[in-house]
Image (cartoon, rainbow, N blue to C red; front, side, top):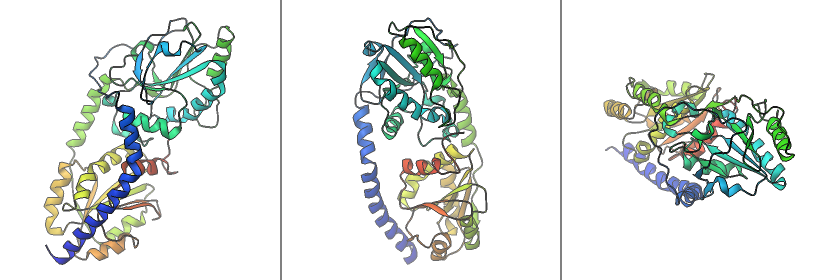
Length: 400
């Protein structure tokens, strides 16, 4: 090992140790929260045979359920017996339409908390039926662990229940999309089923349809418009996993290539003359943290590949190790723009990429069109932080 490579290895290890400490401190609260709230329940998505799903009709009795919540407790239908009106909204983390209604659900709960109205949210989705590129409007998926993070991040003031293992409740209620609302009176008879309102864009609606249904139900009057269609993401039933398996298999079979790039090529990458938000990760096969975190970048690429986003990987391995770097990329199914630095002067690489980069690997940067670096990380990334940074950038966003 020559002196330069030894220098890179030493500084990488030092930065890795420091960055890991920072990252652990930054995420330990979330990890502790997830452990605490999942101690009573371990999610285990099951195979569920395909079946016809029928939406509950007005006049039907509320089906019973017993589901785990993000608050660390199981919740049954009977737990809400004291409520004059029970609202069950099937929603989820990843769907842009569902996210557009999160604040409205919080406000709705607050506005009616003193009137005996209880809001309960249920996520019906099985993670087995979700494609990675369906998560392109979110920083989180629909796992129970991710639900806990979303509930805390948004400050949900209502129970958020998980039904992704067997669709125990969802198959009985029959939601067709997220969000899908069901309003029940004090005898738990369905008085309204459908949308919250007809204006998806945040700030343009106030859950008007469901508010009208609540007011009528509180008065014991029939709801004038008691059934509506609901616009949103289709429910991700477990039997949709066959399509997910097909897409994942096709991805794994894609050809992986590794092209050479010099200083001028790197400068063009950083300049970013494209119309996309560009994520760049510089790594090496001999860099432990690089190898460990690389699969996260593949997932991020697949999550946001249908948005105005692209991921580019650059290997800092010596050109003589190109075959080794390519073999690693093939093993990780890195079917995207992969490069290996073709020149010997690694300091030229550093300066071409980012004068603020201290040279330690891994190095990650998020670059706007025109070359402005809006996120940089020297050392291992925090996947939650990076995904959140991407989705909250004005070029991406959580909503249509």
